[in-house]
Image (tube, helix red, strand yellow):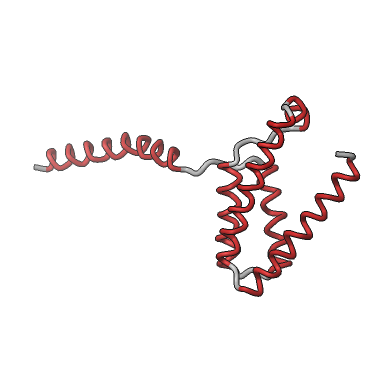
Length: 142
């Protein structure tokens, strides 16, 4: 009887030991994709600015951060300047339209999470961002 219990205990321990790596592989496949450091830094900067400008609650911060992360992951890799220069004007314009549409969808998702007062501040923040980008383009000569 004791030998049988010892045998069953050994079998159970071995089974548990061998099954653990299988579960670990399943968990790895469920992990969300990682962001590159540049995207992560951009999201952190955006969140810092939004928190200061719009006065987000903790709950809003989490939800908006998730929106930005999902958008960065689904957005694919960014092109560098030389890759964009190799594209035709039509291709660049199409890419810019698509990017603008995606950003508008993101902004609408964010607006749904905000109060009316925060939406006003958020729109002012977006306008400030557009102006800042415009200044950089003229400084670079784009």
